[in-house]
Structures are given as C-alpha cells and as structure tokens.
Image (cartoon, rainbow, N blue to C red):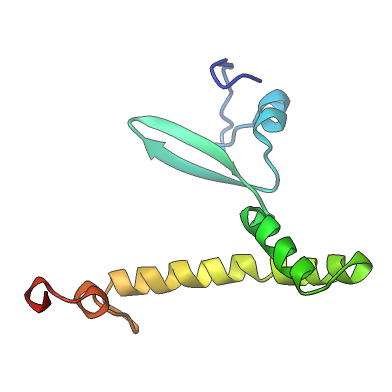
Length: 120
C-alpha cells in the first residue's frame, strides 16, 4: 500500500467503549498483540506495537556472531539468545533516563560529562 493512500472507515463504539480494528487495517499496519493509543491534536491515534523488538540490531548481532566464528545451528541459537537481551537492555536505559529526569538514582550532569563553559 502506498503511504499516501488514505483508507477511511466509520467504527462503532460498544457500551464498554470498545472498538474493533477492521481486518484490512490490522493487516496493512502489522498489528500483533499490543497497540499504542494516544491523543494528539484532538485525534485518537492507535498504532501497532511489535512484540519482538531489537530487529534494528539484528544485522549487527549477526555480524558479531559470524566474526566470532558461529555458524549453523550454533549461530541461530546464539543469535536468539543475544537478541532476547536487547529489549530488556533498552527498557533499563529508558527507566534509568526517566529516573534521572526526576532527579532520582545515579546520573551524571551535562557539565560532569562535557565540562562547563568556564573550563574551556
């Protein structure tokens, strides 16, 4: 489907405030088990959240494994193990960043990392 094609459909809202995503929309957008919902500029935005994340690192992980000498079934098993660690690592980074934004936990200030203008 071209990105500039707009599909539109009127949806019914149940008494429990539930809607059903039309099958064609569900398929086109690649919904799986979770969706993200937000309000932006007076519109309700619902978009898919992929269960499997870390795909953006797949090529890097594979390149490292190949350079380490993995191949065949051993390569596949080690790839799965390392890829499974990506999402928890990202979640921890986000959690740590949120804590730092609230002034909680251990963090370094901009000046501690890069120095102040006075130091130059």
